[in-house]
Length: 191
Length: 61
Image 1: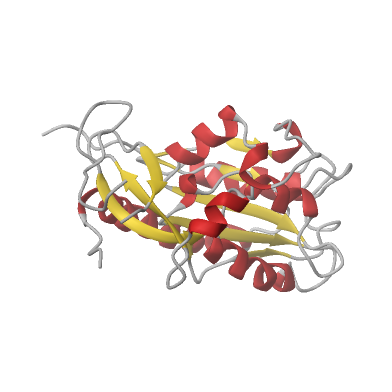
Image 2: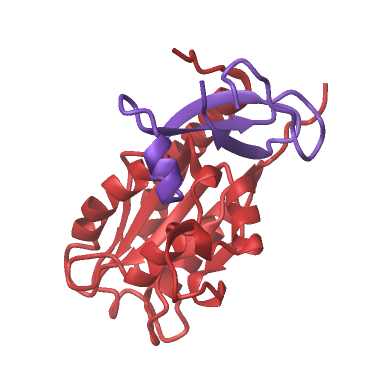
């Protein structure tokens, strides 16, 4: 029997702001994803996508991002909370694809300078994910006090995050595995 | 495309599995005019069981 294809779970860094602490959070999660057997990953920085900003939606699609989303079995979306919402640049990037996402898993990592760790931005993103066809999980990761929990090089100082990230990834991998089976093998009853 | 037609994987040639029909926005005024009023414009999404490729197309009929 052929070896199953590894899951591909990229980590999307969802802000282009200079000095973004979310980059540290994304790196911390990425290291945990990389350590998982049977999972391939990479960091996708939306600042590097080169999306057009004079149009919206799938007309801004780029081949490189589309191919990665099509290959993905699940996404980790790392989002800061700006004025209680998600960055417009993240929404712009996500909106550039659609068919690539359908019936794939997504886990959301919130980042904030305060004590809530992006809980409000995560709530705001859930209906967006649903409309994109993504399937959300119930575990999130909430990076609170983003200017205190990383050192100057981006090292995560609080060891309590490790088990939380692992719980989050365990559910995400389960969902990704299950949805891959469904996408590939369970036919929709079309009426 | 008709619902009865299977989709062939553009990457490896295997028969794909249709796993979703999603309501989507019209891509043009013409498409909006011709949309069925009951369910709107649907796009079906297919996945290749051999290589995992994704493809989609509008549903008609």
